Image 1 (cartoon, each protein chain N blue to C red):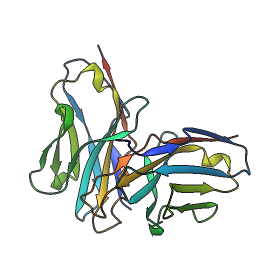
Image 2 (cartoon, rainbow over the protein chains, first blue to last red):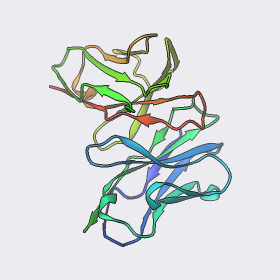
Image 3 (cartoon, rainbow over the protein chains, first blue to last red):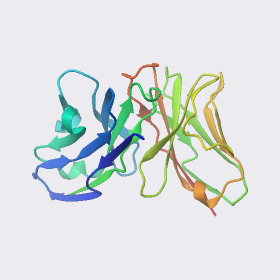
Image 4 (cartoon, rainbow over the protein chains, first blue to last red):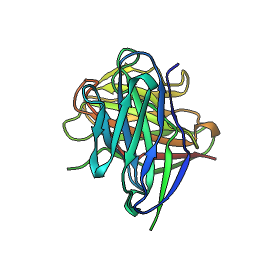
Amino acid sequence: AQSVSQHNHHVILSEAASLELGCNYSYGGTVNLFWYVQYPGQHLQLLLKYFSGDPLVKGIKGFEAEFIKSKFSFNLRKPSVQWSDTAEYFCAVNARDGGSQGNLIFGKGTKLSVKP
Amino acid sequence: NAGVMQNPRHLVRRRGQEARLRCSPMKGHSHVYWYRQLPEEGLKFMVYLQKENIIDESGMPKERFSAEFPKEGPSILRIQQVVRGDSAAYFCASSPFSSYNSPLHFGNGTRLTVT
């Protein structure tokens, strides 16, 4: 069965520290990859997505992610975090030939706390 | 420019009662998806609907759960005879197109508590 694993349950950083959140998926076919963010009290918002092409994807608010097909990974990075990045981050995969569009498989999420 | 609207935000039901969760997609979106998030778990896909059609219900429990998206009005997720294990956050999402390249827009969720 397809699955997505996020390595860290809770990450605590100081402002200006660099961030990398791990995401690995298990599926051998063609995938679309997503990172969603949920700020406290708000709905899930799309941070960035990968469909094809350049494996280094730029998203909103200075986030980027790199798709490494050989490692089945899609790690999220930001060079310098801010207090306002405190949120929960979810990695998700859509198996293009294994499920309908909209059938996303989510990781359990990583809570990021940034200390001012 | 309203986003995906879900109501109620919080719903409390006793065991055996029915729960009805509503979702109005973003304007112009005709594709709706329901997800469930159990405590300490990621979101799990339940069902994908277009107007008046169920496209993919592979994630729906076989009993007590049903979903509809009528021609007029919001999408409804209905849970009959709720049990404690149904306590979760239920999220609705919508998209304008039927395409793998069409990202989902999520609502704020409905938190169901079964007592």
